Length: 129
Image (cartoon, rainbow, N blue to C red; front, top):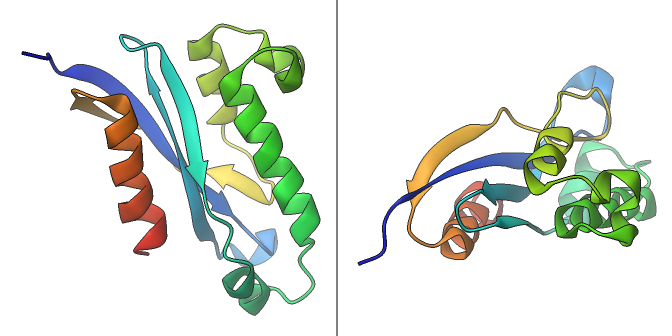
C-alpha cells in the first residue's frame, strides 16, 4: 500500500495589468520532497488574456512560463536557480512577486502520486476556472 506524502502546490497566474490586480489562472506547480517531484503544468488561454488586456505581450508571457518550467526541471537550462536543490527552486518559484507572472500562496496536502495530484489540481484550478 502506498503511503500519503506531503506535497505543496501553488497556482500560477498571469496578471495582465498589475495595477488592476485581475488575473487568470494558467498553471499549477507542485513539489513533493518524498517523491523527489517538482513539476508544473500550464495552459495559456490567449483569448482570455487578450480580453483582460488587449496589449499584453503574449510571446513574453510564454518566455516567462518556459523559464518557470526550466527551473522546475533543474539543470543548466534553469540558469543559476536551476542548479539549486528542488525545495529551494520551489521556494524561489513561489516567492511573492509584483510581476505579470505570479503564484498564489502555497497550499499543503497529502497524496499518493504527485503526478496525478498535479494533473487533478491543474484541471480544477486552470481548465475548469
